Every structure is written in structure tokens, then in C-alpha cells.
Length: 111
Image (cartoon, rainbow, N blue to C red; front, side):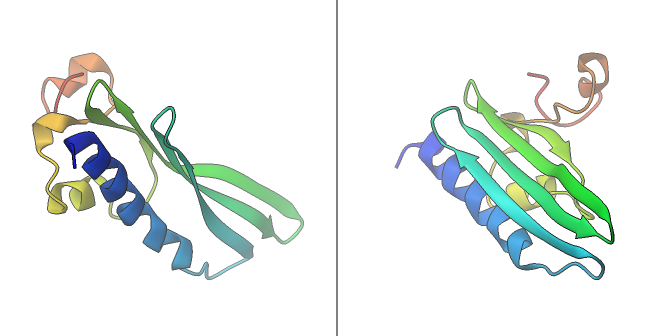
């Protein structure tokens, strides 16, 4: 298995357990959206909190040029640590939510 296919499976294995975590309030669910064609992977929250409709992106990961870009991560502990724990090296993870001039100060890939 080439490393990109391995990265796809790792991302899916990291995101899927979040869909089984119940919300303590509202009628909310987490749902995964995996687009293996464009290598975009989302974890979205949707449902109702009282009369308020909730629909938002909790996590957005892309694979771009062989690296995992963390575009958004609003989980409590962050999925980056889970990606590292699953064997993805720091130099293959880009913290895309940081501006490029800040990324140089992280231990992760710049782009």
C-alpha cells in the first residue's frame, strides 16, 4: 500500500470515532464527508439546538501534494496529535489554519 492510500485510511480512522460521540445538548450529530477523488475529508456537525439550526464544519483535512493539510480543527484535543500517533510524520502535516509566516515557527511542514 502506498503512503497516500495509508494516509487516506488513517484520516478516516481518526475521524470516524467522532461520529459516535453524543452531544450533551441539542439534537446534534457529527457526520463524515470523505471525498477520495479530491482528497478532502470533513467532519461536520448538524442538527438542532432548540429552534436554532446548527450546520458547521468541525474538522477539514486535505491531502495536497502528498501532505495532510489541517485546514480546520475545532475538536477539543485536536486531530493533529492523533495523526502523529498513527505514524504520520510532522514533515507531512501542514497546519493550514496558520498563516505561512507563522508555520515556519511550528515543527510541522510549511507547505
